[in-house]
Length: 261
Image 1 (cartoon, rainbow, N blue to C red):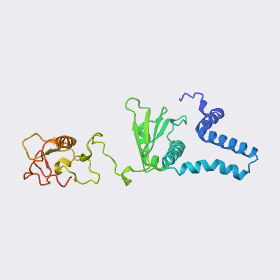
Image 2 (image 1 turned 90 degrees about the vertical axis):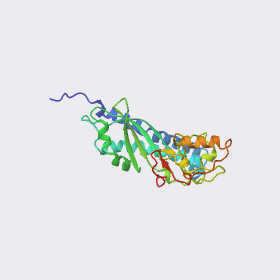
Image 3 (image 1 turned 90 degrees about the horizontal axis):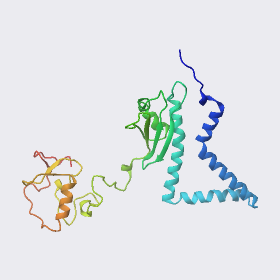
C-alpha cells in the first residue's frame, strides 16, 4: 500500500509562487515599461511619443552588432527557460507525485544555450537522454545533448545547439595549434605558401599520425614538426630536398597517407 504524504507542491499558493518565479523576468520588464510609460504621459507627452521614447533605445541597440548579439542571446536564453519546462511537462518527465525537474542554472554559449537541471526522485538521466530529438525541436534548436554529472547522478547538463560555427565565412582557429605560434605556421589562405619551405608532411597536423621526414631521425607528431621547423627556419639554411620531399606524406610504417591530408 502506497504511503500517501502531504503534497505541498500541489497547493494553490505554492503554484502561484512557482509561476511568479518562472515569469519573474517578464513581470519585472512589464512593470518597468508601464511605470516609464505612465511617467512620460504625466509629463504632458502624447501616448505615441512616449511609446517612441521607449522603443527608440531598443531599436538603436539592435543596430549595433556587438550589443545586438547580446540582446538576442538574452532573448533566446529566456525563451529556452520556458521551453525546457514545456519539454519536461509534455514528455512526461515527472515522478509519481507530479514533480518536474528543477532548472537551477542556464547561460548562453557560442552555439546556443547550456542549462543545468536538478532531477527529482523518480527521474533519471537516461529518461532525458531518450528524448534528445524532442529536446532540440521543443527548444527551436538543431541539436540537443544530455550529459550526466561525473559525481552526482541527479545533476544533468543540457546543451542546445542553434548554429554551427563551421557554417561561418570566417575561418575557425584550431585548438590543436598553440596560440603563440608564429604566423608562418598558420597560412591565412590554407595553402603552404610562405617564405620558409614546408613539406606536406610537416603540414599534416590534423591526422594525428607519426610522420616520417625521410631521415634516420625519430619521426615527430602533430605541431611538434611545425613548431620545430618554425624555430629553426631563421637559423639553419634550407636543406636540399631528397627523394621523399616531393610532397608525399608517410606514416611511421612507411605507408603513403597523402590522400588523408
